[in-house]
Length: 196
Ligand code: ADP
Ligand code: 5GP
Image (cartoon, rainbow, N blue to C red; front, side, top):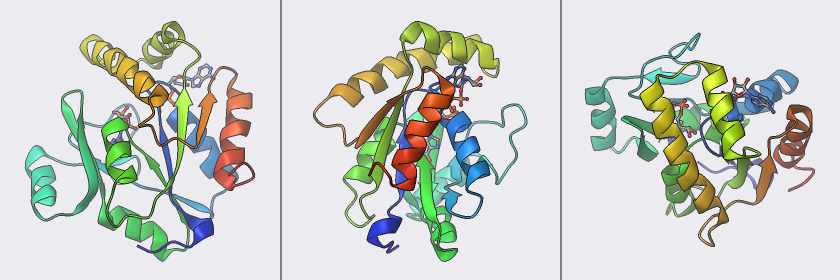
């Protein structure tokens, strides 16, 4: 894992429903060969059209714990009732292709990556919703999660927002996703390096 200075991994984080997947999908369409999405492992089940090996590697709790025991993760964390983690293999797959890795991970993973002894320090982008009310509308509008999961995600969103304001937060850039076009352009400028 030795990216060059111009090829540092990029971490996008922010509350569930902030719009991370929407912005990344568009970025990958605009730059099909430049970036690689770090496909995480998760114990949650597929949502909507999600496919194994594309959005996530969907695994059992046993498979996830086995990978922890084998020290196969760069970072891993619990979110809601599920575990999520970035495997070393996921990162290496992208770097082999000479692409810049993009990780979409939650707060505990952000902290682990920022303090990792060997993983090169990424560039950190935080995507914020314009308000908690709008975040709730978007999570409900997405219509992919059960009520109990939506409530867990909203509670966790408050924690993510507080963390982003704290001195401990490693974020290099905060983008507020109000108007999607504007937010995409701002996120893109940071990610492609014009605003590094
Ligand atoms: P995340 O990946 O951060 O959990 P998503 O990309 O799934 O969030 O976005 C959550 C929902 O909000 C989706 O239904 C998406 O279409 C919608 N959305 C994202 N950005 C905007 C925006 N700027 N205005 C209105 N709706 C948005
Ligand atoms: P979702 O279930 O909405 O896809 O993801 C829930 C949360 O888990 C999001 O905040 C997302 O960024 C985060 N997440 C996804 N993959 C990983 C991962 O590999 N590690 C960590 N720490 N968080 C992840």
